[in-house]
Length: 219
Image 1 (cartoon, rainbow, N blue to C red):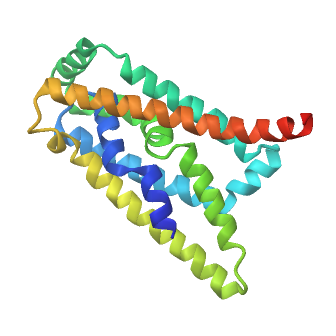
Image 2: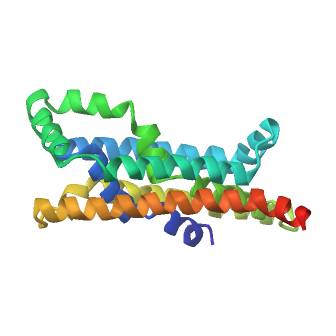
């Protein structure tokens, strides 16, 4: 259940195209290095969210609708930025990558493997909400053994998703290798638009949950 619930919101293949659009054209070794760091960050992020996420939100008095609204706004902003990034910027990134060398490019993007490459591009607020929900569901088991097995199954699902993210991100250039540059740019634009829509939808879900009690009270 954890794997099937997280797979659509993580969407490794679709996220790989967004990752490619954000990072730009780089040497293949750069994608592999970044993919490994992103996968590890995602694994640790999900583990921490599943174990202490609900307690952290409770400590700061943050509700899930607020997380949805704020996180959706961030996702929408990133999608908007990629959607409106000029094609010339991609060409400059490609030329810069060839001129500076792999180590400099990896060092530059390594600082961004957690934000924004892992969160919210790979694992956004939707993943956070799903993990918090699954963690709460696992705590509702009848016995300690069943609870432990439920948490172990959820952790196994996270490991499998991290492996999928690494494979898709590392192979991002191969995914678009046989596609013309103009077509690849078009695909990135479409995916960026979808990312924008996803962000707006997540934000709207949070806003709707916040406004519903007020509307019911006004009636």
